[in-house]
Image 1: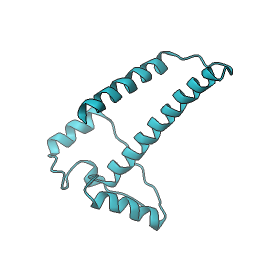
Image 2: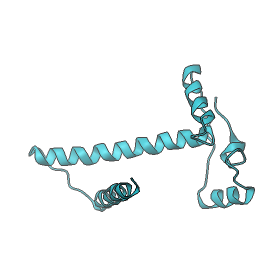
Image 3: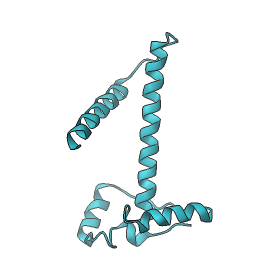
Image 4: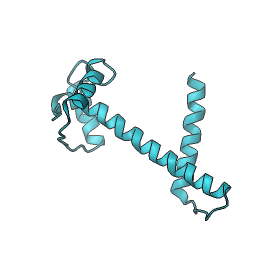
Length: 115
């Protein structure tokens, strides 16, 4: 089971002050999730935190979930494009789909500038 509530508020090596943690919490409501992992998977999470890449186990899991959501959105977009190209039944895109395409375009353009 991973539980690192103190680190969730940035009170570790990241050096976030209590004031900043409170401001962050006020902007985005947080909930606690307790999970049970096999030892080998927990070891991977521990190594990611120990590497300094993530401030806490929660940061690591949040990043994994965000990446999973991005992959799912990318897959949906690609499926819609492929179905249209292959002439199968088309999928109508709604405003959220177009918004996602614009955001992805902006993200890719911004990442080119950062290189």
